[in-house]
Structure formats: structure tokens, C-alpha cells
Amino acid sequence: MSVEWSGDGGRWLDAHYDPVAGLYTFSSCVDLADLSGDGESRLVVGDLGSGGSGMKLKVYRGTALMSESTLLDLPAGLVAFFMDLHEPRIPAVAVASGPCIYVYKNLRPYFKFTLPGLEVNTLEQDVWQQVREGQIDPLTLKEMLESIRKKADVPLSVRSLRFLSLDADDMDDFVQLHKLQPIRRQTVITCIGTLKKSTADEDGVSCLVIGTESSDVFILDPEAFIILSKMSLPAAPTMMDVTGQFDVEFRITVACRNGNIYILRRESDKPKYCIELSSHPVGLVRLGKNVVVGCTDESLQGFTQKGKKLWKTVLSAPITTMAAMDLPTRGFQAVLVGLANCEVQLYRDKNLLSTIKTPDVVTSICFGRYGREDGTLIMTTKGGGLMVKILKRTAAFDDRDSAPGPPPAQSIRLNVPKKTKLYVDQTLRERENGLAMHRAFQMDLSRLRLAAAKAYVKALESSLTPMSSSLSEPLKMNAVVQGLGPSFKLTLNVQNTAACRPVMNLAISFLYDESLYRMRSPYLRIPLLVPGLIYPVETFVECTSDKGISDIIKVFVLHEGRSSPLLTAHINMPVSEGLMLT
Image 1 (cartoon, rainbow, N blue to C red):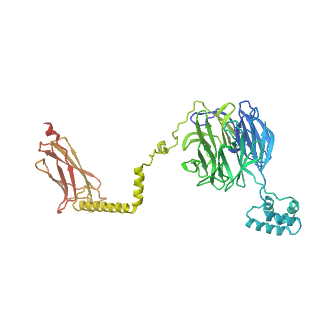
Image 2: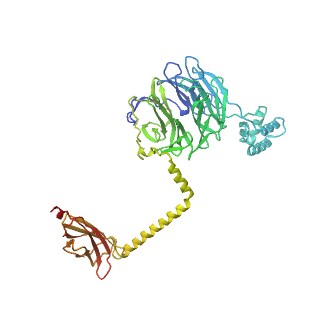
Image 3: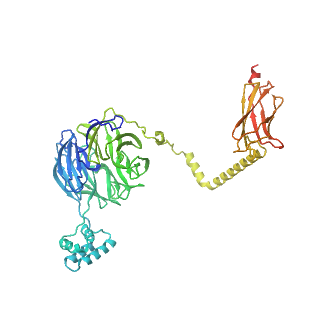
């Protein structure tokens, strides 16, 4: 299907678009995997359905739906991974749903893993035990549970929380129905990822990494499905990105519900680094050693793996989803960002490389090998549509930013030289004598300001400036000398800078060395000066010396009846070249 709204500079081929595919999902529930071992990758989607029913695991081959399986609960995440070394090399699919992970092999249910139960509050157990023995009534039970909820460190179970939300008429029936059942606290899975076990091969065995609502991160063995490692976080995780190998070294980058990003490492069960964001994260992608985060304040930010902020760029609309674009054959890595204004933008660092227009808001993005094409972009829309685009083999992305902004050179790090011994010694001297150096600097600065103020006052008093300081006759003058010599044309541009008051009764007088120069009119009268207009006053100067020297001609603007000039200008006359040539 040919689509005219791509708007991406012709880098993508529109392979397929089905606006009524009925796919309602997010990027965490989409993956690409070769599920048949024939070299063709399939699209695996955890469909959310209507939110309360119709949840299904769907597999697409090309443009057709290959198979679908019913899911018991809403999927929180989906990954394809290799769980053993058996031939042929066919990956399994793990679907995180509620407190369970459902593992499918050959598109059939294979194994179900349930998270271990959480610690139950002992006071809560004692209260329900008294109810079971008939020692307290439902109203007393409610008062005691509310007291426990306010004071206890361990949260109440789902049963007790549900009981507290009931009306008084329904409490007795609820107690009779549940009082004989044991109390359990069960957490749920919020995000899921994969971690290579011992090798970084593409078909290497991978462990499952899951984040839970109880602020824990578990790493599961791929064969026995036992917990290999448990790590704790300050808040519940919402997104994660995993890199490395479990037996060697790994990093788990986790975005949490408190608005921070934490980085977990192999040797510690607590976060190694923390990235504090100004707003909550909505997307998390790791590219090489850097982490790219999309936030709710319509910004895209880059950080190092130790939490140092590298850059920030402001987007044109809120972010709906994010995914990594990795092309190993070209050595190209970038971030795909879906926006609420029906655009998908491609960023490499903070540079915008490409923009794809879409007919609807994109809710999930997946890039990778689909079928036999390595560069395939798969997107689902808010209305349930499915889009497939293929990157052209001739497509090229410039490193320069296509969006207006500062030049790329601004982001290049300066090559700061290493500290020399002289620099270190100078730093130590400044540290030891900082007070004396500061006082000497302040003294010299005060003397400089005093000298400048004295010179300025002297210039005003003697009218040595080309601008008048008088409020009644505010004048400005500049001079232009034309000619090679021995005759020069001297033009004086006089301007009245007052707002509305004209100036009259002015004259111009010249002071010069009569042995060097001769002027036709050494004294000129100036007509009435209208505010704002520039009046040119012209005269001619003749150099009478043949020695190749020059001097200064002083110009005075005078007012009749006053002894001091209104302003003064010194004109540096050029050397007369006419006499030298003759």
C-alpha cells in the first residue's frame, strides 16, 4: 500500500498498513523472533483486547495473523528468549501477566512461574484468627485493621484492604466467605526483560529479569525457573533495560515510579547509581554506554551509565512510546520516539535525523528483523492499526540535526590538555595567597576606575569629546577627510541630538600648524540646527610642506558669547602623497 503521509525523505518503504487490525498494545508487549527455526522472524504481540477481556497472544507472519492464544490476564510485558541449547534453535516466549510468567514453546503453553508470596503482617493474622474463633465481630475487625494499616510497617493483604472498602451491610457475608482461608500477600509483575547467561551470542541462553510491584527485581534461571538473584529498589519499577551477562558482568537500568532511574550491577543488591529526573519518565532506551530517557515534560534527555547528564532536547508533543533502532550491519544506533501529534521521530543523541508522519497516534514501536528484512519498523496505533515499514538499503542518515537549533560543533567536547606541573604549582600558590591576590586585584581595579573617571571629567570640562555634554545644546560631530594631497577636502557632519529644541548662533573654528597647512576658511558659521538632521560643513585644507609629515587639526564648535567650546574634535590628517610623488 502506497502512503503519501510518510514525510520521511524517502528513506522508508511502506510495506503494509492495516487500520482495522485490532491490535491494542504497548512497546513492552511486542517482540520479533524466529519461532519456527526457518530464518524468518515473526511478530509476537501481547494484545490487551478491551482491557477486561479479549487478551490474546498473537503471532504474525508477514501481513497475516499466524496464530493466537487466549491470555488469562492483562500482559505487562513480553519477551522472546532462548532457554536451552537444544537443536533446532527455537526461542521461547515469556508473557508476564499478574503475578505469573507464562512460558510458551512452539506456540504452546510450556511452563508457568508464580512469584513467591510476600510477608504477611502478624498482627493482621492474629486479628483474622480471632474472627475465625468468633471472638470479635466485623465492626471490631474493621477498627483493628484500620489501626494496623496506619501503624504497621508491613502493608495489609488484598483481602483486608478489600474488606475495609466494603459497606457495613456487606461485611458479615465477606467475613463468612473468607475467614477460613489463609491470608496471602501477592505482588504482581510490572516489567520484564532478558539477560544473557554466560555468552553474548545472539542465540545464547538468556535469564529472565522481572520487576515487581513490591520494588524488587528478580533474575530467574532459564531452565529450572528458580530465583538466581534478588535486588531491591526504593520504588516500584515501571521500565527496564538490561545489558551484559549474568555470569560475567551486567547492568540493569530501571525507571521507577518515584521519577528516578536506578542502575543495578552484579556485585550489589542495591542500586549503584541514581539519576534524578525533573519529571517522570515515559520511555527508557539504552544505546551503548548511554541511557536515553523520555519524560512527561516533552523532553528527551541523555545520560551516562553513571548518571551524568549529557544533553537535553525539547520535543514538539508528548511522548507516547520509545524504542531502540539498532542496525549492526551499518554500525548505526538511534532512538525512535512516538509523539502524540502523529509523528515518529528518529534521534541520534540530540540530533533529529528523520520524521515519519503517521495517520494515527503510535502506541508501540518495534524495530528489527521481520521476515528476511533486517531493517523493519513495526508500529501499532491508538485505533488498533498495524503499520510495517522497511528501511531502504540506500537510506542514509546525516549526523547533522534537521531541526533548527545550535550547530553540531557546540556539542563537541573540547580537548582539554592535561595539568602540567606549572599549572599545579600556580594553583597551589593561588590557594595559599588567595586573600592577598584578591585585595591587590581590587586595589588595581579601583585605581583604574578612578583614572578613567578623572579622564572623563577632564574631557567633559575641557569639551574634548566629539559629543556635547550640555543639556541645552546637545550636539554630535564626526569628521571625514578625503583626498591624497596636497589638497584635502574636510567634511564635518554636525547633528543636533535634542528631541525638539533647535540650536542656533554656532560657529566652527580650526586650530592648526600654519607652517604645514593652509585653510581657505578657518572660521565658519553654522546655520540653525534642526533636531535629528545631519548638517555637512565642508572646507578645504592644503598641505604646504614637502617633508612627508602630518599633524593634528583641532576643530572647535563655539557658541556666541561663551569662552569655552561646546565640543572639540582632533583630526589626524594623513600624509600628503601628492608632494611626495612630485
